[in-house]
Amino acid sequence: MQISIRSRWKKYQIPTNQNSHRGKSLLSYVLIPSIYFSSLFPLIPTPAAGQIHQKPATSLGQQLLQEVIKCTEAKSFNQKLTNQAQAEAIANRCALQVVALGANGQFRPDAFERMAAFMEATGVKLPQPIGQGQASTQLSFAGESSIFTVPVRIGKQTQTFILDTGNSQTIINTQIAQQLGLNSSPVPKGLLEYKPVVGNNLKGIEVNTHVLPVLGVNSATVAGIHGLGLPTQALPKNITGVLGLDFLSNFDVVLNPKKQQLQLLPPSKSVAGAIPLKGSFGILTAQVYINGQGPFTFAVDTGAYAMMLSPSVVQKLGIDHRNAQTSQIFGFGGRETVKKVKLTKLQIQQHQATEIDAVIVEQSNILKLPGVDGIIGQNFLNRYQQHWRFSKPNALGVVESGSLVLIP
Image (cartoon, rainbow, N blue to C red; front, top):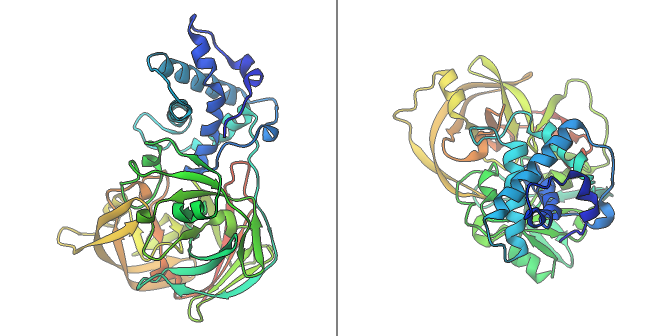
């Protein structure tokens, strides 16, 4: 949705020439990238005007805002804009390039800090989901995989969602969103090519954001979630959504793989001996040792069926994969060919596994985030009962920390 905030932007406008009024008409769209980054860390549509609050900005935030405005103006001068979508696309790409990307086109290590400063300068305050209640429910496997699905109540329907601690944002099938009559905002084309997922086919997919009705798992409910809408072909077969951290972080998540049972409990404090989790680009990571080397930083992801390794970790470990068998994995960005290897030993604190399967992911963005070396998947996690605890999301809607207790 569009916001009329021209008076808010006057002090940031930099008149470069007599045509600068064209850039000024685009400035309201610069707020959209403030929200877009939450898909990279997660994606949330533009807030309503009543949610915009003026507050003093840091010098970095003011600098970034002015640079984004300059970029937006410059790119708009030579283009004949005919609709809002074009304006939004220009503003989004400028904000992404200025705030989050380095000269190499990859995410900067300090992208989160810069994004926070940028949002402070825009005065945007993102809405926070509100959770209540608790639940106990049975889980099912997604097809023949080791990934769990959970029945989720949305509106008057109950749909099958993947339980995914590796996704910052809840996802819904676009067709279901249309059936429910949900309001939607399109994501400018070309921007999702930066989203860290398996597969590289997001660029041409039509994606929307939706203000979701209250989501429920039994008596546990969360209101105020802004979901990402993906078409049917981007989701696994018979899956209509993904339950991400924007829902799960409102509770303690207790998972018993052997009994295929999920409990959502009121949040509690971390306990001694728990594995510390650190937020990084909308995912939660832990320190691991592989084959006696490390530590390495791995995302902890119930939505991944297996261990995943980046090429850099494979090189450090000296794994010879020249004759490795290949396989295909499916993600929101499509299918990707990977190489299958076996790890002699994996250790997370006192927990360890031997002769564990892993795949090398070379093509997609999933392991190109700064400081993320790999993914701990279900072929390790499902060996344990799990008690997940989360910090409250920050101003960017991102969970910054948490803890995980594993019980054999």
